[in-house]
Length: 155
Image (cartoon, rainbow, N blue to C red):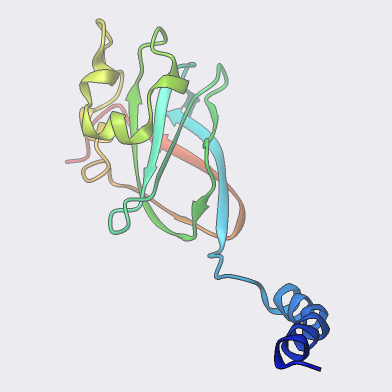
């Protein structure tokens, strides 16, 4: 028997063991992820539909966004790696199709969120992740947050 034939049989014989090890230990490194949902409140009352909620991890730049529904509920478009996130809230022009505007585009070009004559019904500092003061830890699995905004800016 040739060396090539022996090597081929050896690989074929080891294949089930390699598959089993891969399934048991994992084939690659997959980081723990969290799904984020929640409610956006202003002075304890749900904000109306159309407000944007953006979660951004300041070091890695991981980001996901959602728009609120009529009850102030949101569900981020993408799962996020486990970690600490800064959150921003912005009024969004309902004429802008959110499928066409990425979270990165909103962060890079805040004017997209200001299109039209929208007025912040809460202090503007909530509109930027670094100044909002809204920080949440995303854990593995389901995460449901209540994000409470105040009409008056903190002193």
